[in-house]
Length: 50
Image (cartoon, rainbow, N blue to C red):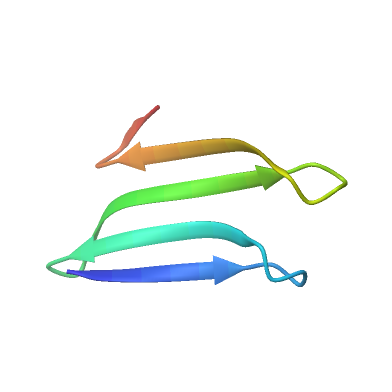
């Protein structure tokens, strides 16, 4: 299992991906307001969004 982390130009975490057997198992995306506070998170596990 491997995880990939993606950051924006202000060094804020915007996406994570968990992979197993060369397939994406889960993805999380993060949203921020104009002050840099995290205001949202969306995740998808094997194609199901929550």
